[in-house]
Amino acid sequence: VLKLPMDLKLEASRGEINFSLKRYEQAASHFQHVAEISPSYPKIFLNWGHCLLLLGRYEEAIKKLKKHLRLLHPETESALVFRLLGNA
Image 1: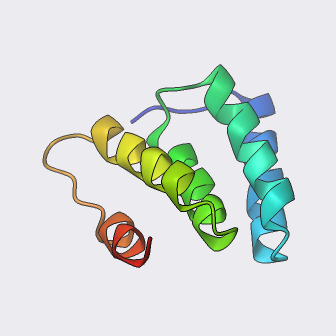
Image 2 (image 1 turned 135 degrees about the vertical axis):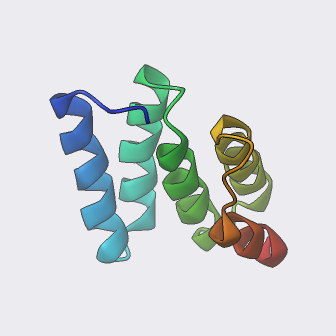
């Protein structure tokens, strides 16, 4: 399991807080920042893709959600990603 350094955990938490407040543009910006520094962390692409989906940016959302799936271990399934992709 890949773990983020503390500064990136804080950045990801800022994204999660903004997401919960329905500030999807701000949340996406925080998730993007984490993804640029730690491109092997699957959950950040799930969160980023979810924001993009809610913003109506479907093509970008699909790319991020597919990246999330590629980064997961083969035996891991992500039902949420498949549901989100079905809504894109």
